[in-house]
Length: 439
Image (cartoon, rainbow, N blue to C red; front, side, top):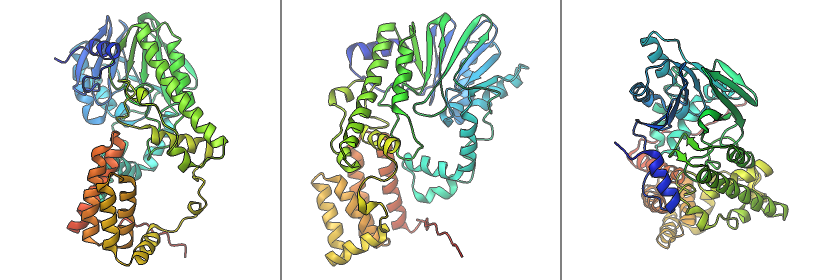
């Protein structure tokens, strides 16, 4: 049995030493307080026993749903009265079908599913962009283009996922037995987020508004996210008389002072990052200037719950720019840029030989200038997509770059580049160009 999540979080926060993974994904159940339990999974599932049925927050990912339900049933066989989605990401709603199946097997009613009103439009968007979402998730975790056709064969949103039965707009209180649950909408990682205050237990379930890593605000492949509103939600949670704080990733935290310190620290970090970017924008700086000048201090990034392990500040800066400044980065040549193939061919023509470009890219990589090395090798491949030597160098260069990155997003995308070049060498890389015929 793993160490109790509250014991582990207390030691990490109090000492400032991150001892190991905090999102343990082991499908183990821990009782956090009398009548409150957590199943740690890809995304956690949190249950409150009201005496008149369970209220459960999140259902984990589709292939973990059954294991999560089995773990919960080792703790309580009471019917699941309500299943609350903290938001519509698949690692939070994917296992919901297992809750319906469990109720049916036990002769119990299917759980009432509750969400914010923006969640059903999210599901509709997932259905409309099913192939795209599968492709970007594959890329984010290092998959190759050769896998993309297979990845798009089945729907991104599993058919077993339960649609909400009840939605709300800003706030809603549900009562099960004698226990009140105050649902609060907030913007942040998504536009459909719900955090819940349970006064009887002095409990907050926070979804992904706190993830024990640097806030997931900058994901380079996902829709807009909202940093100041995110910070406001953390401050609203800190204003409660909270004694038990349970996010959907990472560890549960106990103790009012400990909880509020964590929440305010993350809020202040987001607020300062936004202020620094906006100040630079107000001075006339373009995105390139801001990316290389606005930083989060190392002392902040060393805090155990702000480590840039999944997302990272550089990506967040880009999303702040997008929120306040649109998609153009301020460089005139990139307002209507030429195709990468044209730029790559021009570079090769100027140098006179693609091998010289490849060699320079390798040199820059060996010197530690991975940004420039990756740019050069990608331009070489854009010019000559079938060059074996360019793809071999690209594998080396992106492997070296991946090794020094901290965020899973960067590591995954760079591994995807390696996988693509490996596939190109083997002759398995499909033609992914998309042409629109307007005739």
